[in-house]
Length: 355
Image (cartoon, rainbow, N blue to C red; front, top):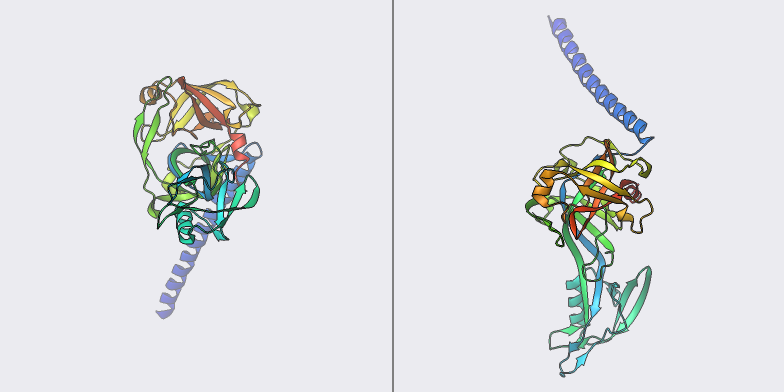
């Protein structure tokens, strides 16, 4: 009797091990098969998951960016401009008296704490660092000022273009520039957030429309990190892939030589869910003066025209798909004709993905 129970238990254990082992083998086999398929396809092009979803964007600069200088009325009633001809628009203040400066509030607090004694600003100008001596102006008993307008971050809304097999993403198709200086922001860190579109301002000839979304900047809504801000878009990694990509079907990317004038689609979520809308590629310029204006497109989809009037702000980064391949992303709208706009070649975006 005891031997009979031992035998039954032994059979159950063996069956369990076979089931688990078989399941593991099957899973491993499927993964290897998928990798083999991807490897076979990547001999012709990169396999990526196309996007089309809106994302919230938050960028932090390295130090604070100089927007300009101004005069200050001091305690004595005289006007002074302590930073005139010392700092330039587009400079970054990265340290003060060897203390690293991370943001505007830290700069203000440090200056007020030192008073009107001479200080040394550590400046990054393009790729060069330099030290600048200057003396703050005391405005009142509690405040001293440098007479420098600065910015330390940027926020906005855009559309994600693709995700590769290493969880690296590309979005926007163009860089994020400072609104005052029009210079490309040099970032120290950045974050991608969940967002929801609440309203669409239709584009009219002469007046670009826009997508209006709600972005709650907290840890719960974080989707990933931004590591690069370039002329070809923003790039980084997505941690919560399932929260952003409901459809994770990969497609192949196209080279510039494969793109033709004619029908295509753009993928975006202007109606609340990700959909494909019909367009036409009307011009291809492989040697465009601006890297993010190599493709000219025209919206032909009646539904999209009814909702947005064409291309609106916030759609930057919307994937452009032709013949089942990702060929690029929407980047700009023609101000005088909202039905037309520019796109960037996906080939140029992929060059900026960190390997």
